[in-house]
Amino acid sequence: MNILVFIKRVPDTESRIRIDRETETVIEEGLNFIISPYDEYAIEEALRLREAKGGKVVVAALGPEEAVTTLKKALAMGADEAVLVKDDRKETYDALRVARILAALAKARHADADLLLFGRMSVGADNAAVPAMVAEILGLPQVNVVTKLEIEGSSGAAYREIEGAVEKVTFSLPAVVSAQKGLNEPRYETLRGIMAAKKKTVPVVTLAELGLPAEDLAPRIDVLKIELPASKQAGQMIPGTPEEAARELVRLLRTEAKAL
Amino acid sequence: MILIFIEIRDGKIKKSSWEALSEARRKAAELGLPAAAVVAGSGLENLAAELRSSGAAKIFVLDSPELAAYSSQGFVQALDVLVKETTPAAVFFAATAMGRDLAPRLAARLGVALASDCTAIAAVDGRLVFTRPIYAGKALLTFSLASSPVIATLRPNIFPIDPGAGAEAEMTKRSIEIPGDAIRGRVVEIHGDSGAAIDVSEAEIVVSGGRAMKGPAGFALIGELAAVLPRAAVGASRSAVDSGWIGHSHQVGQTGKTVSPNIYFAFGISGAIQHLAGMSSSKVIVAVNKDPEAPIFKVANYGIVGDLFQVVPALIAEVKALGG
Image 1 (tube, rainbow over the protein chains, first blue to last red):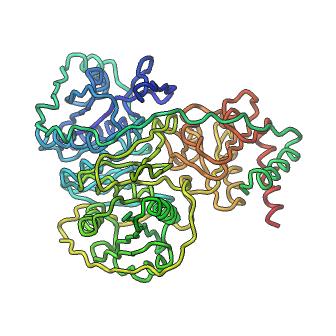
Image 2 (cartoon, each protein chain N blue to C red):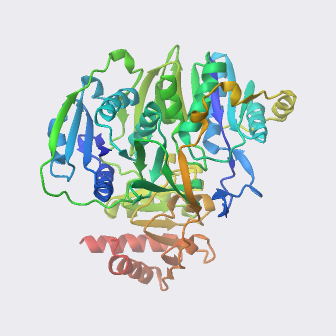
């Protein structure tokens, strides 16, 4: 089976975020970039499915030239091919714009994909919307936030997290699935994988080559401001023995915070 | 009109849908628009009647046997029909598992942008301005949408519920034709009693434990405290989840869930930046740690430096005493 995995280059989750208030953008200088953590579960699942059923795993990313490094990491994990859709625009936070580009790529170049895998959300834009949008644009079924995936012939079953429970969704292929932590344990790149990835070239597709109308590429999110959350006042430390502190805490939660 | 999608789980209207409805009514009033609620399913008239005195001007019941079980393809088709007929200015969803599955699909079908997981909404010069956390809450994005209708999902536990007001809403039932082959993925089973267990993302109190709970036995203390608190759920740091002491659905933080309960208890959680990102929008934060330098104390409203295995049992006893 042929699997297309979409990944994103994002700031490391340990990053401290700084804002350029002139341009209302996140300052990229000094940030370390990684594969968005949920995308690693998607890559791992694709590799496992290929190992079980044969076929091909292609990883795709939308982003600047630097995202080639991100794609190479996925190649080192074991993906067969990679493709970059080059986009020099800074983060737009507009999931529909991203979804239209990725759907156009899938349609134009990877129409043979049986499964489109994503991480459940990219860390940063935090929309968790692109997988569902791509599914809608391509007319495919979707299962999001998946912790277990079974594929049998041309259909599948996926278990997805909902509030306090797990939903089992059955679907026919081709389909869109987004991965949640718990789906698997992503492998590390091997030295052999890294060497093999170095030799592979990553083809670059331009936005123009995908033939999207200009209006589809214009962000529809008007950013008014990006700011850091208000820093909290230092709290109150409660002294005493464990029993005294516990009693005082419960009293404060009831009378001062009025939260209990 | 602002349209609010009302989510039904286990035969009940979800609390977060009441929150979204309340916020929609407030914004609709500011914009001089009516608010209308929509439910989708099969045979939901009696349930929808609960919305009659909710303050919504209208209630739409989208009915089809194909909507008896949730499917993104079936539900989006039903909502698309209603949106095209009624041309609302905005459609609000609660940012629940279902809302976050369905709203982007509707936005893509309509070719419009989406405001995801909003924590504040303002009406400014006749348009809606949204604020939402990005980078898991390390920054806040304030924006408006340059497309119509405006589609938004609202984070649970943020927007206050207003009691319903006045006039009885007019209820319109609409049969929706959905060809069977239009739905190629659907929910066939739900495992786990979603009525009994409160998810961390929806709980009013979250009791979280970290590495310093030392093991599953220590973690059981966390569960014991959660059990005696009202509407409380057990949360965990990444290291507690990765150690296998509790399932990943309890993980709070940048690669887990984002929570905003009334009280967040952090027991033996040092406060890594990824964890803080997931819980710093909680209304009151309580931290207990043996290390007085732990970063978690910087965001806590109340802190206790001490031995978890003494403080947590003492708290359980205090809370139990309240109940008695």
